[in-house]
Image (cartoon, rainbow, N blue to C red; front, side, top):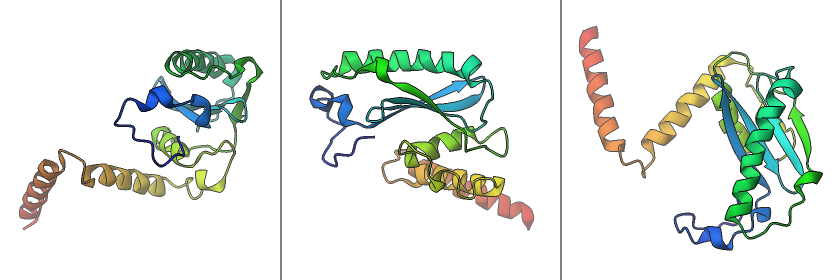
Length: 176
C-alpha cells in the first residue's frame, strides 16, 4: 500500500517519482493448486512474510521455494521500475504466519483480501475476528461482491441491476 493520499495512480508518471521503499508493504497473492497464499515484502522490517490460511506444515519444503521465486520476480520488478535500489535484499528474513487457519478449503481468497486490507506486518485481531465461522466468511464474500457490483464506477452496474431485477421478478412469478 502507499500511504500518500495525493498519489494519482491513473497518471502513469507516478512510477517515475516513486521510491518503492516509500511503500512499506508490497503484496503478492499467489495461487498454487487452487490455494491462494499471500507473500508480503515488508520493506521496513526487512522481511518476506508468507501468509497461508491453511498453515501448511511443509512451508520450508514446499512453499518457501515457490515464495522465493515470487520474491525474486518482485525484486526484479522493483529494481527495474523504480530508481531507488538501496534495499539490501540479502538482509531480509522469512516469516511464516502461523496464527490463522481457515475453517474450510474454499475461503483462502477471502483471507487474501482481508490480509491486504488489514495486514500491517504483524498479527492483529482484525485478521481473524469471527473468521472461524463459515457463515461470516460467506457474508463478507457477499458484501464484497455487492460493493463491486454497486460501485458507481462499475461500468456494468446498470446492466447487472436490470438482469438482477428481471431474475428476481421471474423467481417471484414462479412462487405464485
